[in-house]
Image 1: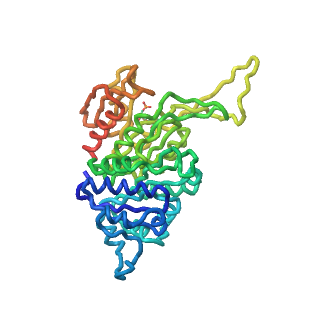
Image 2: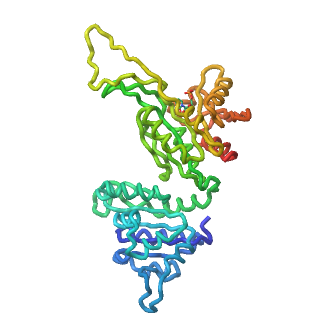
Image 3: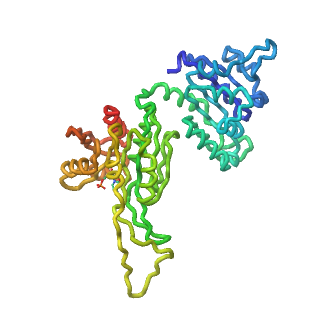
Length: 398
Ligand code: C5P
């Protein structure tokens, strides 16, 4: 997949720079053309001689080449590249990239590049944990960069924790996967709701449900794999997206989910409503833990939550696609069709409820009903595969 691809390999000043040699070898062996750009401190860890011998090109570090005085054009380099990989990326380089501090050739090239950028951070565990690193990574992610999370293990300091640069083979695999996937959803913005909502009764109790968010997170991963930029507005779940480019906005209650979703809906091309939103919430939330009284049984009055999908259906533009989910126990197809019309959806995914489907399990069996009346029933599959089926149908309309 990488044969003939132009790759800029950016190396910064961290111990993990020695692993960049293996990464460079893998790229070259796969037939890619690699231009190494190294920061001044990167050269303290690994010599340009090794890197230029392996890449077959002079290594670029300065704005000018010392012996000839010629200018190294970061603009040309940025346009030449099919991908830029910064491995290792130190905390300092992450900060500079996030905030546009272009004091070396590597960061300058990054700012001039138009290609996908992959960043593999590497640093000590406390530096990685620091809120400034987390904030910089979040910013870089929001600019559309692909973050290759560091692994946990023994670090150069002999401390154990998260901060080791991902292994070269795995970084190489991320690039291979990226170039092998069809980017049919490039440029599309996808908004997904997932997980349960928790409706507070008092500071320690809530009304919730068994939704784990798995289906919504699989759909998010599938859209990202096809090049879309994806945000999940997620209720409390323990799953995480596999693809680190999925942006997660965490909420707790239906009201919070509605606000976070509606704020972003106008900017979305596609919205997929997977969340199991609580239909009701307690009218009042006790500000102190409700005490067990001897004889009195507390009465909790419920009020209706907003129907987020229906609200989106009312506000939907012609060019937006709105997909809902349904879980029905009786008259499933008729009820799902009714829901599709009532909420002004373009498509509804009908889940079946059995031991192998529904909450918490890794498999699902769905029937997708479209506004035109077309209905497609799929076999029992893993949720990852179900996500592919659903995204295939959506992409026919997008
Ligand atoms: O009406 P019902 O809850 O069965 O509708 C299910 C669909 O509507 C799902 O797509 C669900 O995410 C969405 N929904 C919502 N807000 C609610 C209730 C359901 O977005 N309050």
